[in-house]
Image (cartoon, rainbow, N blue to C red; front, side, top):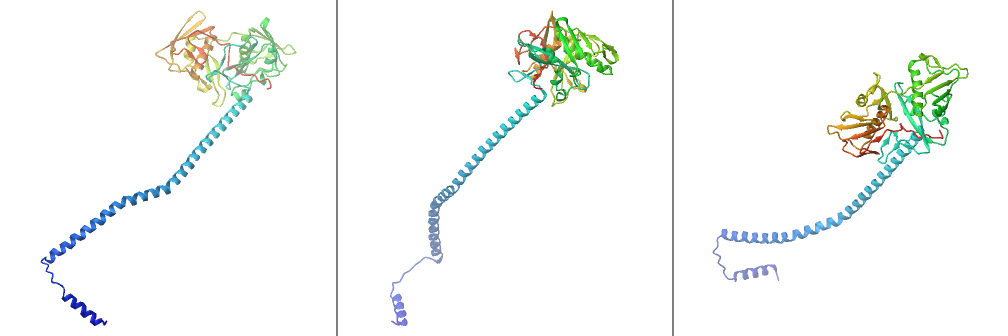
Length: 396
């Protein structure tokens, strides 16, 4: 069929169609079309809105599936890292502790000093009792400025000859590591102790000189006093080979020396430097004899120029009285004592001070504690046998 014939046929069909009359205006038709279009759009949006949560949920699940393994891995790595860090820290701490212990052992072995510790890890600076088969060797060294004497003590077997220890004390007194002055009775001095006759014989070389100054001569005398008065020695005889005696500087040449009783003192704490040993030392009054009240008040006073600290805290209040040989210390003004090293040192310094005034026991009243360290404060406490215990190393 030709194209022109096809066109004529379409036109003929259109002319034969029935007439359709639409009385609506163009505006009404337009509004109808716009309303229909809006309904279709709402339907499409509604369907899309229902589908959006589904797609969102799927998307979140997918993201979680991707990220959770990473989180788990990170958590494992983090946990393992933390565990490893903790292990490293523990290993480091153990190594440090071992190093400290080794260093402490080296230090103790080096200076021959092992502090006497209580069950609470507090250090005791006194010897309160010894065994029946033991006795005490007493020694003394000056401080670095030669102002005060520092007594130390060794516990040795009773079966050993005590003279041998006294004649070898220079081997055991590691004064340089302690931060003290030197021991004046060197190995060229030998001693014979006769306790039954309260006599000490000191053998010296003819050229021995105790020192040219009054201070050196005084240290020599005080050394003999602090070392041998506890043994009951009252007289020292010097043997020089030529019977010439010993030159004590300003005192002249003497052949014998009488041991005088040590004066009453206050006990304070001496420490030359923070890395050195600390010792309780007897501090006499500069004004001569003093009362026990004056001595205990003096124990609150520091002497920084001599590296000496008071042993009774300034805020501790007390009053004292006595009952024959018992000193009674009553704490006042709500003084509270702690179970500490500082309090133990205070108690021990009071016991030693009381001993220097010939008291045999000390009672502590109104302490608000019955026990501090090894001390039972509910009963009178015996004064110590000696001060500043040192472990003697026989291999030194």
